[in-house]
Figure (cartoon, rainbow, N blue to C red):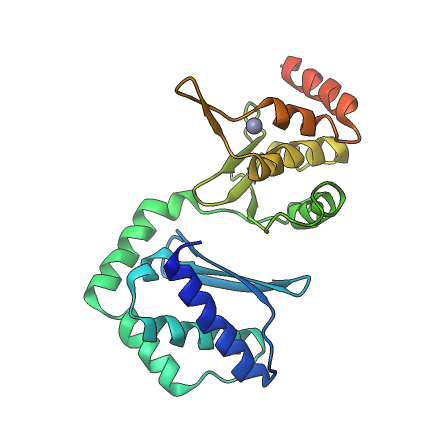
Length: 235
Ligand SMILES: [Zn+2]
């Protein structure tokens, strides 16, 4: 977490205390995120609060960060947003340099927009929660989880270290695909959150021995391997 994120988290903690009128704030995770625009998200899962603030706002004045914290927390509780916060934020959003950065983000990132965790058949959010409980003592923070836009067959899953995002191929979101296989692909990507890449002999190693050992802890490991073999040999 960067100093900017720590400061931002303090604003959110303040906003929680003031808006809920309680002396304590919940556990809050705040990060800057490369949304395709000046967008922000806030959600509660298991009494923890996850906030993503557009990285466009990274260098915004602290008063604007504070205003945004009050706006997002008020929205979370369906409370009215204070006028002074609203005005501060709007003035900032309409600054020419901010508008330019927003347009640029839309152009450059728009196509890569994630399509969401709820598929037609499987729900990645729910699956993540189950695997996190079972294999990680609930210690992994919730990443941006999404099905891929296209039904990629060769790449079934991907973990993005920079954006802390996991994308699973939409080709797995089907009644023809056993649940343990989707879970295994997601589990593999979750292991990438736990095992950071190592540099060995000048090369970045993603699947270390410890990673592979953890991978074999998956309850349906053998079945998943067989299924992956079948998938890759199918034309
Ligand atoms: Zn991998």
